[in-house]
Image 1 (cartoon, one colour):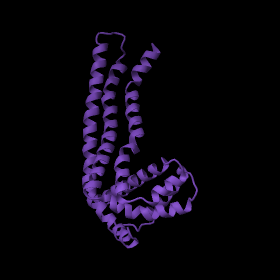
Image 2 (image 1 turned 90 degrees about the horizontal axis):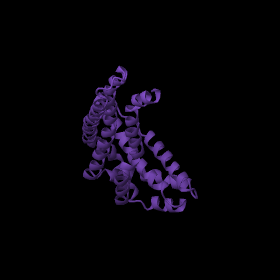
Image 3 (image 1 turned 60 degrees about the vertical axis):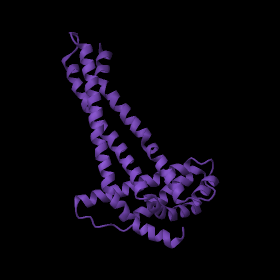
Image 4 (image 1 turned 135 degrees about the vertical axis):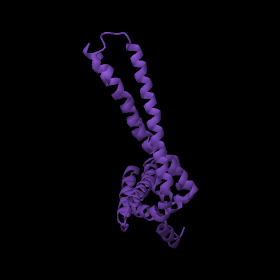
Length: 234
């Protein structure tokens, strides 16, 4: 893809991303609502099961019984985050393919990648990935600000910027997986739209997999803290 076409695509990119914002935002909101409901119901079932197990036990203190109301709340709040992130990523992946957003992302990140590769000649994959990330951050930070008069405008701009950074981060993750710096640089230099779309769509879920697992596990552990305290103190 020649320089003139890249520049034209990059200039159109922000407008195209903004047109995808409503669907992406709705995906996040729908996922958050679904997560709230599913995790809240799970918490209620766990609390009910605990209450049935403790029924008729005079040793159960009142504060422990009251803590059963905390479990659905904790899991529901965690569900908002888990469902929201998953819904946002699913909607983003859908918009990538429907609106061909990767072509615009390609035009925006390819020049930054070339600069990063030139600066990090001979570096290992991790160093090259760090330089790619730094160059992409400088590229996005250097864009002229947009006048945002309403809350909707500000929300649209925020979702757009976050979406583009998430997509760029998938590229950085791909670079860091290379066997050596030369292989990573070679992959980046011959990167095309089709290749980038495969990388981005394939890596979106992986970006947040660890964080989502930690949030889900932490919420479950927090739900059982009151019972653990009681058993330890018996």
